Amino acid sequence: MIKENNIKFIFLTISVLLIILIFFFPFFWIITSSFKSPEEIIATSTTIIPRSFTLEHYNKILFSSDFFIYLKNSLIVSLSSMIISIILSLSAAYGLHKLKFYGNKFVEYSLLVTYAFPGVILLVPIYLLFAKINILNSYFALIIVNVLFATPFAVWMLKAFFKLIPNEIEEAAYIDGASRYVVISRIVVPLAAPGIASVSIFCFIISWTEYLFASILISGDNLKTLPVGLASIVGQYQIDWGFLLSGAVLASLPVILLFIFIGKYFVSGLTEGAIK
Amino acid sequence: MKKNNIEGWLFVSPLVIWISLVILVPIYIAFELSLFNIKIIGTTGKYVGFDNYIKLFGKSKFITASLNSLYWVIGNAICQTFFAFTIALTINYKFPGKKIMANWIILSFIIPTVVVVVIWKLMLSSSSGVINSILIDLKILDEATGFFSSPNKAFISLVLINSWRWSPFLALIILSGLNSINREMYDASKVDGANFVQQFFFITFPNLKSVLFVLGLVGTLLSFNIFDIIWLITKGGPSSATTTLPLLIYETAFTKFRISQAATLSIITSFLLLLFSIIFIKSMAPKEDD
Image (tube, rainbow over all chains, first blue to last red; front, side, top):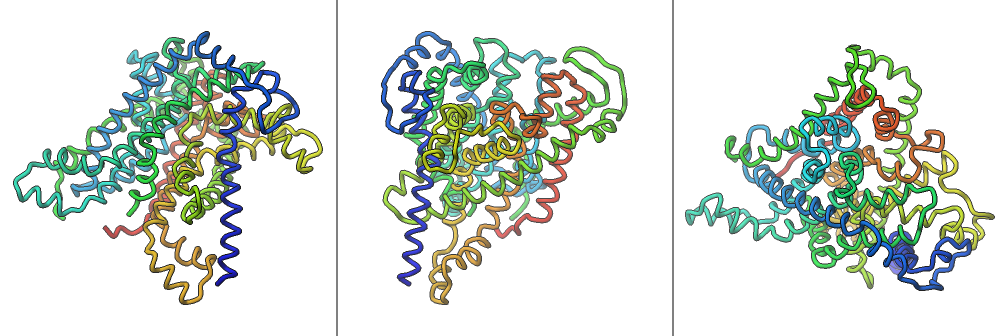
């Protein structure tokens, strides 16, 4: 017994340390590097503790680049995609969860398989379609595809949260004469609020990080999103690392801030809600 | 439970219509394009029937990219299963800082892919990367190596980077499955003298069936679709070693400007993925008990 616990303890310690090293150290590294002098970033001998401190990269990106334009575009696209995704998937998830109807299994599996079609496979035809109906170079073009990417998983997560709501509460409300609409808006949605919060974050993240379609469907500089703006620096022959790193940190900041406030719902939602 | 057809479809139809329009109309357009030989977007071409399809199977680029995609999916599945289970099983234990780790492990998933690219391009840089200098300090390497310079190294590095991004997210989903396993089963097995390896294979793993089903299906399709990490780091190189089907489609359409060929590739790829999904669902779907 004691022996087994010792082995467990050693395993646990090693894996905790490895997880910290592999999954957290890189963040420490780029954040500290974004405050280093350009010479130190590209120095051949690297030290873990920074030797220099400068704000020049942040100065440059905030005051002499298009950062705020990209930020605004990313926020508009991500927030709109998130709101539309949530409305559509709430309704679909409730339908799939509560109302057994002809074809519900088919819809459910098709939603999962929908993950097969997004991505580059749709890129060419969607480009042509959007060109035909004249919505290339608009927020709307990006919102349409982001909703497609976010909703299948969102429905699946929401369904899991709905399962946690005891059936009796809803039944009691119906007996009291409440309509379907009242039950959904007064009982189901409030009780599933943590779930809805986590699904919202998921939808926001999907849109916030989307690069491929944003890089093809948008050509005007004034409509580019943050990932596309950043990627254009990555592609340069001589990379300005300080500039790029501060941009990377700033582009991650909004999702991290969002996560500080409602992240625990996301994680507990994912870990406690799903699949029961 | 009684069927509720009209109301049920009313609830799902907005999403179903949205998704169908955004998938089916483009698929139809792609199919139409694949029957012509159109090169640059906006120009017209002549009708060639199924010529594009027939030619495609003789193209070595298509075969190479298909194989690369296969290796990519398998490599990612192995790596991500390993990382995700390690993370999930670790977080499932109590240790100081567990809450913080559980909340923030997903950081690599919530940041934009482009940032993932920036992080690893800097850390793995051959001239000034911290990984190189750590490996040299530990005497594992004699001199700095280029992690993206040879076909094999580039492929493996990309698989690891992509797994780094996705594993924490998968870990949380596995954790949800772990949480739903009845604790008493572990206690009972302990009484019977099972060690934790046996517990993993006889209790944990079988009880994760429905989680693993979804992860197996969605995970495979998601890793198949990965484009940006590969494109932004290696552009498919060196010598096409990291050109998977998504990259081949992109290249064909937007750098070689052969729209019809790209459309043909898209149709064949969709067909393959659909086939995979149907077989996977038919053979692996867990029995419904709710």
